[in-house]
Length: 281
Image 1 (tube, helix red, strand yellow):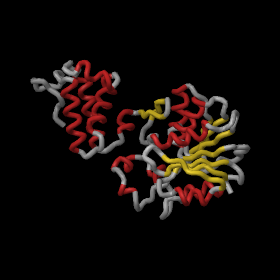
Image 2 (cartoon, rainbow, N blue to C red):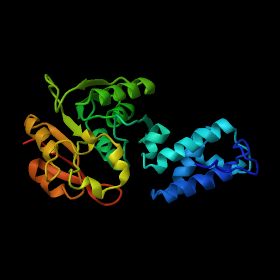
Image 3 (cartoon, one colour):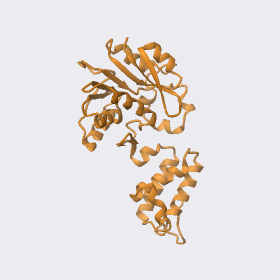
Image 4 (cartoon, helix red, strand yellow):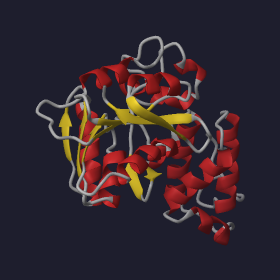
């Protein structure tokens, strides 16, 4: 990759903020990424250690060669369709910044619906999250509703460790176990919350290239032909009468309501049916 934003010399020490932004945008756009300017701004701001809104204040200011090299390396990663959250090393979720890497999915805005469900529970309710990944959902609940009793689990030891790291970094206490489905000995739970795999092996290639860089076990798992295999498994093992709040694909709403009692489905910010809340049969 050519040095970005040079203002005359052959080295990169004379790169400017504006030049870096323009070159990064062009590189990311040429790769076919969806939001090239926003991605470029996020990368340049992150490596400069400033907020995105501050970039325009000193657009002609020179950027040290070491920082230019870090920006160029990050732009290359994004141009290869590595998710922006992985390139930056973190992603916003509710009021938290969650550290993410290739061990876990990066948290999406639609997944915040699960936090809304938990945040509406009675005082002192017992919540367990299955498939916690980065720990984003459980940690947001603990942060917003410290009265809740929240635990989490994941079948991936690497993901469980990522969740523990986030808890420590945020100064929140979260017990995370490694288990497939519900951990042994789990009792007295008011609500099981889960964002489990629901993308099929047949349809994953129809989605953005970035999803290919996320852990396949968290994207498709054993979803089966209709994408509901892992979800059905959790519903089947959940004790009758326990509450369940589960994220799913937008075409799964009717099927989800059919698998739970007293079920309702919440729509995401795009209007799609995304989270179904009900009671285990």
